[in-house]
Image (cartoon, rainbow, N blue to C red; front, side, top):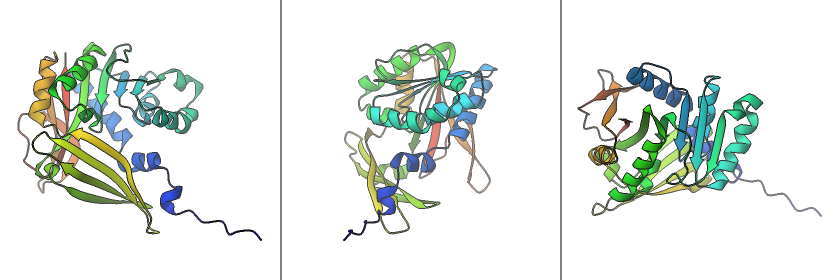
Length: 270
C-alpha cells in the first residue's frame, strides 16, 4: 500500500533567494538611481558597473539589460548564491548579454578587476566590516576599481528605530517579509539582524538570512571614505512631500531629517 505523500508547506517549497529579490530589491529603481546620479555628477551616461557583495547578481543582470552598451562585474564570496544567480539569471540572458556580464567568486578585498564608471555596495553589505581599519581597507579597494571620473555609491540606513530590537512586517503577494533587528550592543555597535518569511498556510521560514554587522552611522562612514582617499562624499537624502511621505527620489544635501527610520545613499568621488 502506497504511503501518502506529505504535502510540503509553503515555507518548505519556497526559494529564499526568490523571496529576497521580491521583497528587498527593486533593481529597476536602483539602475535608474545609479544612472541619474552619475549623469547629474558627471554629465554623461554610465556604462560599466561593479557590484560588490552582488549575491544573486540581479542588479548586474538589470544593468546590462538596460542598455546594450553596458557591462557589469559582480563579486561575491559565497559560491551557492552565485550559482543560484547563474541558474536563475544568466541562463535567461542572450549570448551577447552574457559576454557583458562577469561573475567572480571571491573576496571584495582581493578581487581586482578593470576599472568601472560606478562601483556599488548595496543592501548595507559592507557593514560586515566591524572596525574602522577593516572598513577603510575595503573603501581603499573600492576606490581602486573606479575610473578617475567614476563614483562609488553605497547605501545606509539609520534613525532612532535602527538602535532598537524590533520586528517589522511587510505584506507581499503570497508571503510576508519580516525584518528582525534581534540584537544591538551600544558599547561596540555589534548588530544582529534576521530576515524571516511567513506564509498564508501558517508556515514560517525563520532566519532565512542572518546578518552579523556593525551599525555604522553616516558621519563615521563619510569620515572613513575621506580617510580612504576619496576627495568628496555627498549624502543623497530622499525627497518628501508635504505630508512627509518619501517620493523615491534622492538629492545631495547637508541636512537630513531626524526620522525614526530612513534609508539614504552616499556618493564618493576620487
